Amino acid sequence: MGIILKLAFLFFIGCILGWCLELFFRRFISKNNPERRWINPGFLIGPYLPLYGTGLAALYIMASLEDTLPIHGIAQKIVVFVGMAVAMTLIEYITGEIFIRHLKVKLWDYSEEWGNIKGIICPKFSLAWALLGGAYYFLVHPYILEALSWLSDNLAFSFVIGFFYGVFVIDVCYSFNVVDKVKKYAKENDIVVRYDEFKSELAQNIKLETQKSKFIFIFGTVQPLTEALKSYKDKLEQLQNMNISDYRKKLKK
Image (cartoon, rainbow, N blue to C red; front, side, top):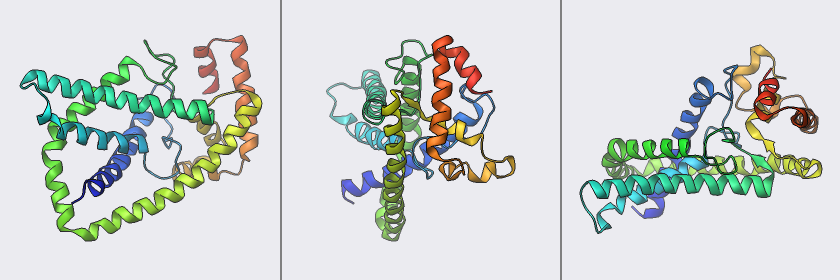
């Protein structure tokens, strides 16, 4: 099987599993969601996160190159783990920087974490990436080749991957259209939109009985996007008179 098909498969799996991981993390663990709402993570509509798909492909490449290192034993493992953490942190930083600088959207915010850089990366989550890299190295990578071999023997499954990428491309086009509208409003009003907080603002307008079924299609709410952005901007202006922690507590009320 060509390396392109292998990486396409890994990107597909990483996107889905990463979305599931983030979904439950934000529902049960994240301190930025005190009301424990179901919030669709990321900026896409469907159940996938490209950041994790890219990360899984990168982890596979790094683990596959392990034997090319000039060192062996424990030192080799340490270099691989550190490399995985650095690679994932770099992917996270580049993604966050692109969205903030060019789209005026902040997909996540580590501003309250120690040692953070622009609220995009921080030591705490770099450590989390290292742990995920370790879990992949020990629990997944030894068997990934078997899975890829199975895929090569069952080429009909490539139809599933093709279907995924077809839907994925449509979703990306639609979602970037939404983000472009957010970007225009943000530039006109000189703000950066924290996407999770903005989606939470939209979620408050969904009726309780339909909230669980519509949380994925959050942008299908009856409230116009510009109206929701204006409401979000009005709350951001309260930052002038309170610190960030007090503001976020008020925003979640």
